[in-house]
Image (cartoon, rainbow, N blue to C red; front, top):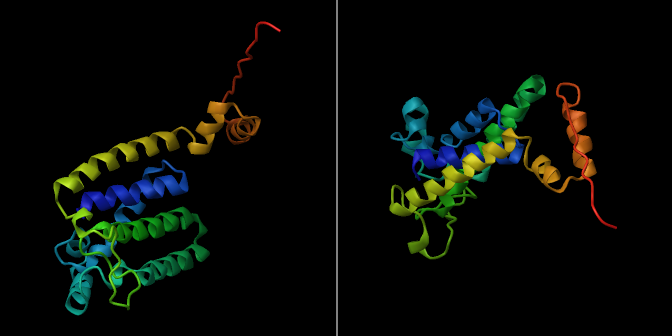
Length: 201
């Protein structure tokens, strides 16, 4: 997949799963989506960290170790280990873990697939029909890219307005939603309620 595809997928997944519109958190998640491709020297991550890229590229095939559950677990262990001593970074660690996972998992839908269960060399691919899988830089990927941009904008807009749950509660005017909104924003915002009158009996 193209780098921009990884950025959009990981950034959108981070925003959606964490329910945030914080640009710093989303940026960490998006950039983390590029890290699995550090096993190739021509990738954005490979160009930034060429010595790390050279280590992986000379020892392992593309989309093997760095595109696996083992790699995601290692990133999470290191990240949450740091967060134990610096809890103020917890949201960034969440973003790092989510972004990294979606960065390599999206490659499951490409023709080459990934070694998800590395060190097992078995490649995981989806769908089963090779002709339906994405090819990097193909028209199909650009079509998916347009859809991803629309989804990313929608998710960011929803999270900027309080998140999916808040929007749903506003839509149905649920008392629990009103109470949650008041508890979260009552001390900093003026909240006004309109009373609706019904006509007839």
